Image (tube, rainbow, N blue to C red):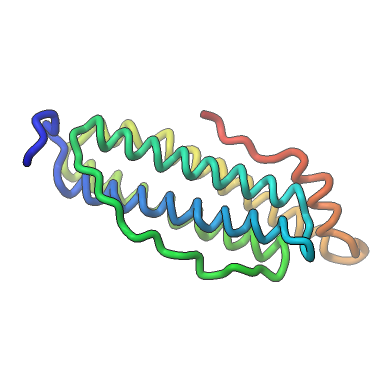
Amino acid sequence: MVSRINQNFHLDCEKSLHGVINASLHASYVYFTLALHFARHDVALKNLNKFFKERYQEKIEQAEKLFLYLHRRGGHISLYDIKKPEMSEWAGSLDALASSLEVEKFVKQSMLDLHRVARRNSDPNLCNFLWPLIDEEVTIMKCLADHITTLKRLRSPPFKSGEYMFDKHTLGESCKVPH
């Protein structure tokens, strides 16, 4: 059955939007796994746990925004299998942050691909909807890259307890994505 409100919402845009939703849900899955990793008794870095929980929640909210937009445009909701995270253990916070950055790059690329499809199909509404989300991706990628740089500096001599100091002092000032 074709939706009556689905005016100017091309099927290619709808399919690509489902891909972005899936990428956001996959990212939330990765972040949830990361949060659990840093909550373990043998890792016990509470600010990293909190940081990744916040990222998890942001990705869930992002997927919800995308679902609501799809619904508002008259698209059909299709739930795809969410790919499980490639890792469930990380060598340390630097490894975890690097994994996070790769996940964010993937989400951003899926959004850019959707934007390209929307432009090709003359859908300015979808293009305008995507820009703030793409900007959020840029913001969080910058934050992750900054944290990676800080942690690399703290891990080099003469600092021996860099991971602990990073967790205690840097992540106390968590990245906030503007809503």
